[in-house]
Image 1 (tube, one colour):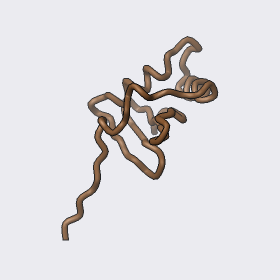
Image 2 (spheres, one colour):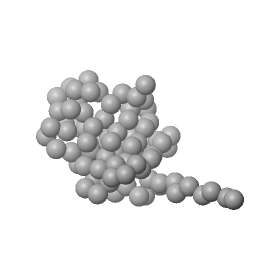
Image 3 (cartoon, helix red, strand yellow):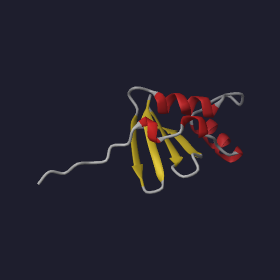
Length: 87
């Protein structure tokens, strides 16, 4: 028996639609220890587009890991929920 896994592609995530909420902005900035003026959405877009990014979809969320950062994105709304330093 052959098992084929559905591997998500970067094209499955609408990069231009990525956004976050004010509380998400604060949470991401705090978790990644970024200055207050940092553009967290641009940083997250760059990580999603990184050629080494590992992208997984589990339920309603995308999990993207690259550059030692793990991002959680709601698949339906394209809202960046959080970003953390990965271990």
